[in-house]
Image 1 (tube, one colour):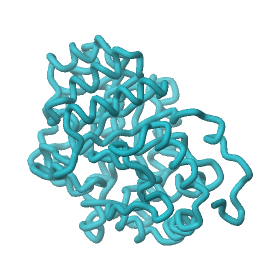
Image 2 (cartoon, helix red, strand yellow):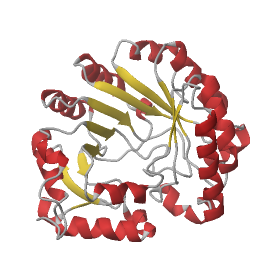
Image 3 (cartoon, one colour):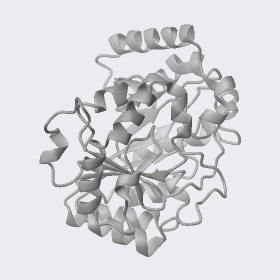
Image 4 (tube, helix red, strand yellow):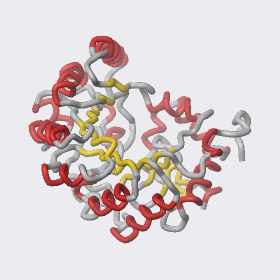
Length: 326
């Protein structure tokens, strides 16, 4: 049911399938990062995650529906035994791929295999420019390994993106990380306000930068954008917060499906609402249910609450099927 002020038509209504699928293929990870928005950690694989056969069946459905672009992420996608089979099946069918990884497990062998596929980018997280700061936010992680992974990606002539999640621990190193990203050969640097979701929500009091820190952070990004205008790297920090993204989505919902490790489809990252289940629904059915969800009064109300009160985002991982989408 449309919201009181929802438009008669959205841009997504004209699309037969999503333009982008962000597929969290596991909650398992080799790290326990304090800022993780999915709540992933070693041994945190969900009991009902899609197995290899189920995941490949979903991949076939994505291909059949001409989905042009898929991101494989997690958790850490490289710990999933069928990661390469998924990447190969999608990529060999012409689907553009993005791989989101912490870089700890990426090696020459994997990079060489990825060169055979239409990889739009490999995104590696660099949440600090010194081992002490990096490991404080990513306990047990090696910054040296992350840098080596970046070099491996570029040496294989794969496009490298770097992402930076600001916290009280690392926000002062953002300029150094941007400069590092340039040196490593990244074509894009992604950042913005920390998301109050998952593990980050539990540690919010000690993680979240204050208003003045964010002002300085934003000024640094703007200054770096001016200076690096011709350096071959794009600094992406708009929308600056997930709240800004939600506000824009109210009138123009993204043509994106966010798929969870068990095949459930979320309406939006900051909401707990589930609109489809790829175990029970085809991709076409899931896309129709997603578009309908953006006219559901309960979803619209939840979106407005999430825009007005950032603390609501902490419930985003308490997934529940929307009553009208059971």
